[in-house]
Image 1 (cartoon, one colour):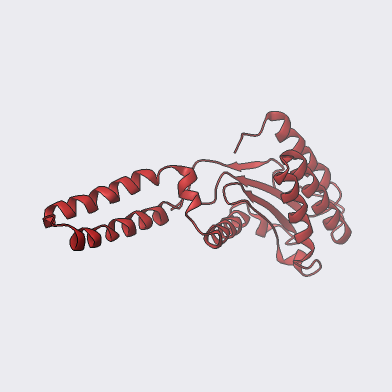
Image 2 (cartoon, one colour):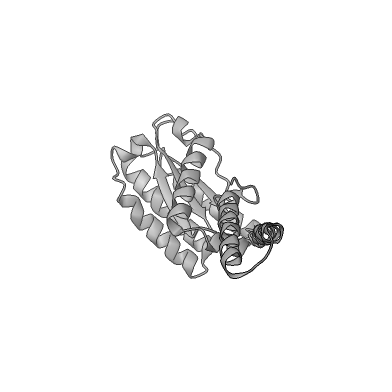
Length: 210
């Protein structure tokens, strides 16, 4: 993931501020390089490959057991080294696992950013994880009582279309503006419109779990 320029950040943060000025809701944008490192999954594949090595050697060669063991160990070490290559590691992980991990990370960020603590339970998280090609909008309970889950699918579809065409900043701005319009319709500003959460773009980069 290319880093966001200061201009990109300023544009996205200005869009958040503008959207929140029309509603009592709160919008947080979190962008991740990846939702997980998948190292455990990669090591599992290296181990499985190593376990396959002895069988052809046992039945097709006269190698002593010590050589077969060394060959098995060598394949595991080679596999573990190759799995450090990020592109390969992410390629071998099934899409279902990547989607599940990205969704889990989105939920974690919803809680970590305190969106569940807003007074009216009107927080919205826009979460994107680039390695998994994953985007999601999560709203709090107060919003889901008035706005169905399906409403946010359009926001995600528009965002992913922009991202797929390389219009990253515009994609986030459009998603923020749309979320702001939806929130403004159901949750107009109060008499004292308190900005409960920061309006800056949050970028998670370089620290993955297994």
